[in-house]
Each structure stands twice: as structure tokens, then as C-alpha cells.
Length: 379
Image (cartoon, rainbow, N blue to C red; front, side):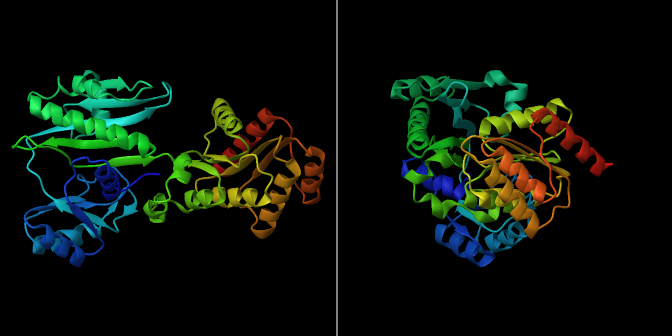
């Protein structure tokens, strides 16, 4: 789950990171009132889960409440990377002498948190990594955790002033604690700023939470923003399905993450492009199949749909019943290819046959068929 900046800063504040005070506003009037309560110059920042807010006009300074009103009205009228701006964060402005980048991300290959630090903050870290990878310090946190001496060793070469390096080390330790105890897969501060007075501040917050840990965090329910989700992603979450939208035109409905990955690989192998990753899991619930088809058909880019079911715990007849129920309620406008094999396979075939559908047992054959049908639709 991706957090908005104000939510990320709320999480950071819980662990003692130095964030500046601010409040969320949903209207120009609210922005004006917040600016008046904070006093002085404020920053108004669009709260959308997309990068490049500043370049899109979603970050502005205001020197007084009336200027905050005017600029909030402009920001709230924006759409940034397809996302309408519904709220903005009004926070105290800070004088910046120097900007750094500081983040902890889960390195799945190494199975460890990865600390990344750079003296080039405030810009896209991907650009820094591309043109000057040596300017990013990387450190894998050992199993025993991030110790104070490790944090000092990481920050000292980057900060010329010892007191600033000590502050940055403290920020890094607290960020690591937030990452671990907050069950994050990413905790990023960009920029980590140094003021002319030498104070180190976390001026931004980008946080991604690990959904698998949601049962430990009842407060996450209040943080989730359905407005930032696509209808398909929202339905998948509500129905307990694993769904990731991709850029292709072949919709994939598969049981099991491994088989789903193999299916996408095979589609690419034969020259097609998968439109999604969608795993209905090991459940024998026909409702999940119906929900999966609703998600796939909601993607206007899909030209053909592939069901690839290897029945173990998942019963093929339940999947077949789900397909038939869904098609009775809402006939498909694109071709459908079905591969079924495993538990109750023959029963499933009969259910499909009675409805006028067929199924193959060959995964390769099914993939070739669905690619051909997608190409015919696109011709």
C-alpha cells in the first residue's frame, strides 16, 4: 500500500524523525486557515501518489494565507499523471542549504533492507543512479539490525560537518526503526535537507507498506485511499485476489503465483504481451473467478483472455462454474481461451461443454491460441 506524503510524515513522526508541522486541506479555504495557523511562509503540496509533482505545478510556496488560498485553488484544479488532486498538504517552509537523499528499501534478492544515501537529493534518484551510480552509497543491513556505529560510518563521509553527520545518523536509525516496525517495503526521504543553521530535516516522505502485514496494523484501514486505486485494483483487494496491471493486451487469470509468472513468461516467449498478473489463489470459490473476469474485462486494452488453471487445491469444476456464471451475467466482448487440468477436470469440461465452451490441457497450445485471437481482434 502506497501512502500519501502526509501519511508517511505521520508515520515518521511516530518514530521521532524531524518533520515540519503541517495539515491536510481539501479546499482553498482550509488551506488558507492552515496557513494562518502555521504562520510565515508555507509550502502547498499536492497529495497524489505520483512523482513529478513539482514539475506539474503541484508544489508551490505561499507567503501569506491569501496567497495560500489562491495557490491551493490552482493546485486542486490539477490532474497529475492521470490522478486528480483532491487534497494538499500545507506545511511550514524551510530554508535549504543542502539536499541529500536517504532511503531504506527491501532488497528481495539479498533478503535484507538496503540503505541508500546520496549527497544529490531533491532530484529523481533514478537519474542519479543512471548518470552517476557511484554517488549513491549502498549498505545492506545485517540480521542484527542497524547499529549506531554503522549509521555514523554511512553518514560521516557525506556530511562535512560532524554535528550534521550525527543528526543524519540519528535520522537514519529512526528511519530504520520505522521501516522495520512499520512493516515497510520502502521508506524514503527526498530531500533530507540541511538548513543554513545546520538543522537536518526530513522534508518529504515516500512510504510503501507491505500489505502482508496489514493484520498487525489496524490503523492502516484509515490510511488506505480508495480514490487512488483503479476499480480493478480495489475489487481485487476486496475479493482477496493478487492483481497487478501491466501494459499488454492479453488478460491472464491463473491459480497460483508461480503458474501466473510462468504464464506471463510463455506469453512473452511466443510474442504476446500480458495485460496483467492475476492470481485467484488456491480457493475453490466460484465468486473469485467471477470477480477476476470483472477485473479483466474492466481493462479496455485487453483483446483476449486466458484462463490457465492447474487444479490441485483449486477444483477445476468450481472454476468452470465461475466462468459460466460470469458469462451468463455479462457476455464477453473479447475471445476467451481456457486451459484446465487437474482436480475434477472431466467434470469441468462437461460444465463448459454444456455452455458451449471448450478447454485444452496444453499450456503452450492455450498461449499460442490466445495470442492469435488477440492479434485477430487488433487487426
